[in-house]
Figure (cartoon, rainbow over the protein chains, first blue to last red):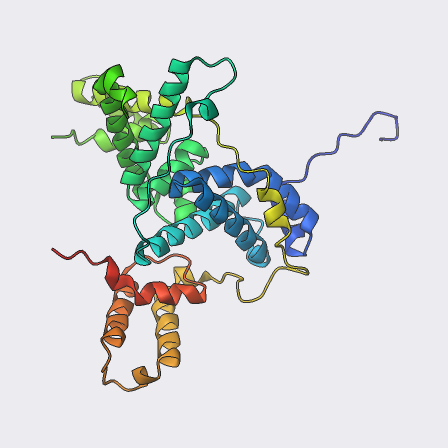
Length: 205
Length: 152
């Protein structure tokens, strides 16, 4: 409360301020950062690895790496970019480890039942369309190269600018522009094919 | 055959071109039907992403992360150094680890195929953008890089 009785507005701490506290061992500050970014990091991981269980494992590891690396974080770097750099590095390594270990062929993740995807009041045809769209987007993502997928997910799902994506991926902005264009065009072709297949063919998907 | 301006269209749509580049591409768009159609396709596909169901992590993720936090200040050997930006440091670290972990490698005479393959893969690592090589498991990744080779 200020001197004249007017309530003082307390500005929320910035991500960078919280990260400095984390560097000094504050679990409370880390929990606040986690709450701010758990959806973003989990969503990025899901769009990148294409599997919910693996995505949550990856998200856990990303946040733990974030904590462990807090001592090297410099506040001049935008926190969100730093966080997604950690996330992108981890997910890229996760995919590469999965490839070289030559795991037995796995069934692609089965799409969730229609009733699990539908919102209250959503019509069955809308739920079907949402399911088909999700499948098409997932297939398009998995067909991309790893770097295209990472750049696309950071830009389209997490809203990073091309410059921020470039910093997260340690790439040039020119390279990022190319990655995002190829990825977006690939998605457009996939969705156009879905549209062209017609309702009958889509219902068999 | 794609138009030479095609690679600029997504950046134009995303508002990522500077004024000069934007003017050039917009001028071109006025005269190129192919790029106009591509722009429409790109815009439609990006717009459809907003119809995807929202992603929600499991309710247990928070507990799982917070209970795994170590006590005390962050630090230890997991603290990142800027090795990823020093191209020589990654293969050098892998090579040092290799020669320490594989006694036979101290001799130049590779009798085991696995040793030869590892040495070959270390050369690949020098040219391969390998971000985040910071854990012991990463050396195992290097040792098995040859398994990614496509055989006709």
